[in-house]
Image (cartoon, rainbow, N blue to C red; front, side):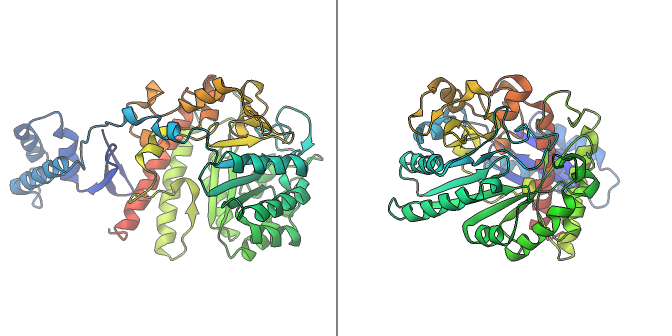
Length: 461
């Protein structure tokens, strides 16, 4: 399968099965578009007529270009057949029962009252609660017991607001460090916080123990304070920004993400990214809102062309700042064209419910944080393990070939079938397709690849 598009002044051709990315001139771009469904004579004739009168395009040039494309096909770098379907599910089958990561819901409570919160202001459709040290300790033991020979383990401290239970966070990290050598494990911790409770103790601890810190900021003050308010209705922007700046400076501006959410209120989210950059932050993520249909913050079909244009303008801004020596990272544009995930990982999809699980304050297991509170998705608990094998089997069978709509999609080996939670909340099935999200993802990939091409070519004009 071939995907062709023009963006940023580049003609880009993707060979989906091989993973090859080609930046080509106009003639090659047009020949590739005709190559599979026309014979050589017809292609040469059509291209010659199109470029008649162009001094820089001769018949010899066209024939030579056709030969080059034929060579790329013979080398399996263009028009390669997708033969991966028989391999779908093999990776999950090989790693069945091996858990590599837990999302610890250290606090089902929050000191903010964000209107768009998918977790119902941190309560996850239930009662407010915090995780005890005993439950967290057992969760870490469960992870070690079920991690097989895997050495590197990941633990996310999540909420609600995890700093509302910071003492337990510290105790659990101390416990994990005390046992990792005994079991030949290495823990990598992440903390996600809204920033309200950040102080010097939090900064020192996070910079010592957290491999990554995710900081919630929606960008412009008026946008952030529209949704991210306390229970008195007061915005949090002025309170948290100085704390974030202090933490990031202490981390030497690395190993963190400034994570924002854009909604119907700000489909022009590039302005929020620019605000983050002006504040000194350079490791950025801006996510589309996850909410129920009809919610006032829901992105609409009228928002879609605005959002797609924002992604393109964001790519242009990244290239501009690269040239100025002021680069920044955008999470969704991080792509490794030379390496990246192996094909087994690309076709097997998200590891939620299999190698990754969320743990509630009382020790229940769910496929991921976005399923917590949905009782039918409860997998089991950290004492008895997974007993809802029917649900786990459903997640085991999720892959890019399990969704008919994905089979002919050029982006399938980049998205790996997409987010099961988004699919479920949009369609009622974890094997459904969240079509709005697909449009956003495909545009992000086109932009990310264009930026990677520009960087690899050294921004040739």
